[in-house]
View 1 (cartoon, rainbow, N blue to C red):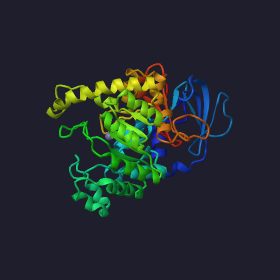
View 2: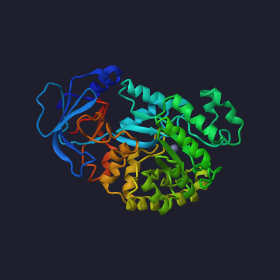
View 3: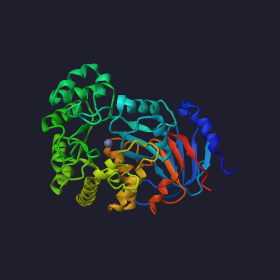
View 4: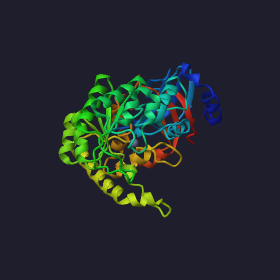
Length: 411
Ligand SMILES: [Zn+2]
């Protein structure tokens, strides 16, 4: 055995023992090429020392201290990838995320606070669960008419039961839904400025929450210290959400230049979820998907224009997939590759899922870069992903909070 690790050993030791979080013996990664996305140039042949879940040191000098050593033989190391828009609601999907090198995901809705549950498992040191930023239930105008039916929130919060009978939740209802989520310790609040695009029953250019409800939700979230993400498609819906003070626009396919300028002024981030619009029909696509195709093509065209404009105007574009990491669903790697084909450089596309995403999600003091003191969330590849982004599809090493989740020999 050329290294001191093998897949069997790693999985046996680490996965079977979630309490391994307390391990304090250093893990020393030798001969690593380090791509720190905040820098323009990779550092070659580095030694990375990880200890107690943090990056202790990155240096061109070999480490002499005792510890577990792993010879990466020139593999290329990135900070763990971040997906800013996921709907991961079970442990199998969370594990799939990690096995693709995605160590952080921002949930944008999960039934019964499954996202808070996953975050809790991660926090207690489970090696197979990525870091999840939870958003619980979204704020939307009518709980019953929404597809899917959102009255499940009442089962978690019986005191919200009266909202079921209202035609609109109104500003007061919006505040109450924000507070209910905050009581369950979410990290973000999600609001619907427009209707959904992915179902035939609703028109994504129609507003969902009105201006008053949007403002009330953002005010209440801000009072509670929670950032807000807005699902929005139409230019009017996006502008209303930005003016209300949201931090991110999700989808935003029909944004015009003046609204992007407003986003730049307000410091709003753009999460276009581009890959979702670019999935081609196949001969066995169901009839509903065929019926939606003209709409999806229109939104794809709009998204590509919006991304090009955002890049020109300096509005930050962040990678999010809008999927659940169920079997065969797209990965943030698909989104990174798609963003590069929409005009971002390879390094910019990688930043959209690492350093820039961390900044957007307010976790950039600990994640999204490779620096001493940062969380030891790392992913390594045999070849250089800056040269070919397809390399991102084959991680050979995934380290989650200092613990090895996946390891394949770099040889
Ligand atoms: Zn979504």
